[in-house]
Image 1: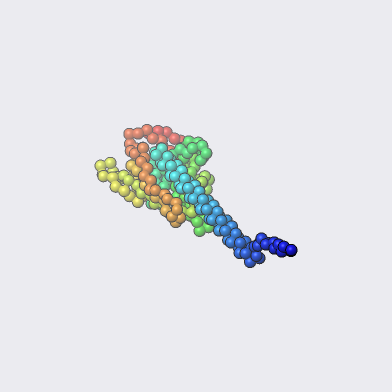
Image 2: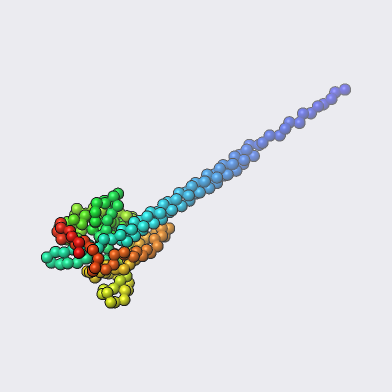
Length: 226
């Protein structure tokens, strides 16, 4: 008597099944790497925006500090006697001291304005030592310069104060009083990149009225107090 024993072979994957499995695995890997790449770019973009906004806050704090610690300085020459302070809607000139890493070394004549190079606008700080016999109301080739903000559209300055002591203070686009400082200055910076936000800052000037206060007088290289 013969017994016919049939061995049933385990069925394996067919070639088509292997190809389909590898295709699905490839798609999963592509989706995974795409998700990781997108997440990484999003993280980098978020970090960049945070860094840019932190830079804006630091620049805003620096400008506030310089203006709030202004030192009213009178320019006296044969032709004129006037306060070294020029306030326009897009430019500001005043006197203050700078920290050491920004130039330091006594009272500086500081100009804040927008310059343009290669179709890009940037906010620059020009400064020079107040011990000079040249006019403080003009830019000089020897002025030091540092860029505070890059890739901005414009700035807008306004000034709160009165032309005369007995007048009510109002906001103005320009400051034309040669004897009095404004009570407060407002600064807006316009940036095309909407991810960067510059809140309007209003800076009170601690030294308001010149008369009756000890102030410096700049006359050539001689400086005294009044």
